[in-house]
Length: 273
Length: 269
Image (cartoon, rainbow over all chains, first blue to last red; front, side):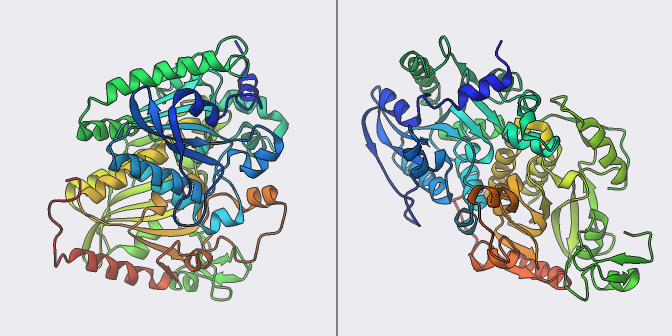
């Protein structure tokens, strides 16, 4: 079995298929749509419309670059508020026209910068969580690489959440965690273990619904086969979800996230407050 | 802070006689710094005397990931807090208006949001929806509770969804952001207030200042991520000094009690 840090390295592998690769593989007649209509078009979020088999869908995701130059332009897949607002615009558009939504998650996290804070990074993510929890069309999320904290969850409130076998999903990066915990970013491998951020861990914690197999060394070596597995998972999830009434769909989505968390109910407690 | 005669301002180090400091609402008379308060102090500041009743006190944190040093940290925090968790929830009257109330305690592991905080916030919102009560939240937090890993991240989705439930019953969420409000708490229920109030000088943001500085490699402008900065950028409704907070809350709650033209039929009731 691979160590948690081995998986972190695979999740960040530069040759790993990006959201654009998934979109090209999964969709026919893809039309890319741009902009949040408020401030700008964020190149760290890619999105648009097209056909998945014969089903019209809206698809969107974080977009990393395939080389250094593109990565700089796309902020390494770290979205600004305008990226989250563009994602929301596309999702509301999908709701208006009765299209299911597919989101592809692959980000180190939301962009930490002056402009991002000025324009309300926290508000943008919070609003997406709020709106996605009530969206009246099916949402399927697929964590393809790095599921970095609030920046990932900002497009991740879905009826079905899948992870590729070598993807990660975590509240904080192992490096960030290690520097808080042990004042030493080099202890990231230990932090990666402690955070339980692999697909198998999340399945066990009942945070995700399924794991998409990656053959051999991983998706970077077998992109076609990996994306083929993803297509099957998405197709069967769509089959299950498209027949549900919107009321039931939204209620089940609420219940799904409502259940998450582990705590005790200490009935003997009699404190002041 | 209670059992001493004198206290020092955390910002300018001026020494204050505790009785004077208390009558000044724990705000430094020299530099205006608002000292961080624990839940019992907040209850005394905001609620009508004797009206606060706690809810969900039996929820206790566990260590679901068996995370290094978490159990010890939790035990120490519980000890220090004389029994409560990082958020205290209940209902109270504020200026005669009954409201559901949540107060976060930055003294408890920086009021970071783990499963218990998320669950108590969600339960409070559901309680308020069920009882048709407005919700007041006094918020401060370092963000998500790292030691509960992905489960803490999911509390963001859970709490944001529960705000939606409250809105379905047409009740308002009034948030009071105090120092500091950052990370995953800001990016969930803290930024979903129908009326967002912040205390003078409070640090409010998503990413921490240190992380931003490391990323962009330049100094941050003065006043960055303060309540006043957010107000200027359009991210808040009101910035108030603590002595005016209760009166502001009462006005906001009373105005929301009146429904001169009730909305019918829309909404997810």
